[in-house]
Length: 289
Image: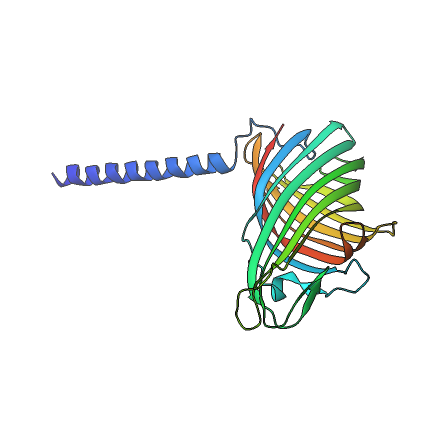
């Protein structure tokens, strides 16, 4: 009888061990695909990346009076109380029709709104908002980025390329008086808003490398500075990322980047200066062929 009980216990332990081993094998098979699936290529022929990023967003804008008066340099985040969004949506696509030639398109949009009692006088365009008045503000930034990369060095495990990029910033800002300096409702509407398109070209270097058959590393740095008739931009970008591809056509990616734009703008819609800084972590999914 004891022998039967002992044998039954051993059988149950063996079954539990087999079940644990099966679960472990399933997890390993999910994370580390079978050898029958070939290792991913370093450069995709076509890929779409969708995700979001938690970003630090700092914006300083000065809008001068159309009659020639100088506006106030305004930190929209600190002085106007813009509320940070935790996640910004992002979508991008890369297409490599030939071995050494790659084209890409990225898009994102972010909006911020806030209400704040002013701690100084602010001049924004033709409007002046007095100390201790309460204003409502909004800022929206939309960006389309197109880039072309030529890969003169394309080895099996690493590649080096030169990128030419163009980013079209579409900036909308508005400030509206809500309450006067004594907390009273304004006797007349005091509001100013502007929408401007800001071209931001850049030149840079791209690096791709295979860390393992399923892990890819990428890095990019770029810079552009020029003086045109209506705009004088300084553009700087830097990004480093990691991509994991456990499946043949689907993977996960993460990167951390910085983007800086400093420009003097003199157009019929906007006369002044702006400085935009973005930095943050992006996370998303890759679909590739």
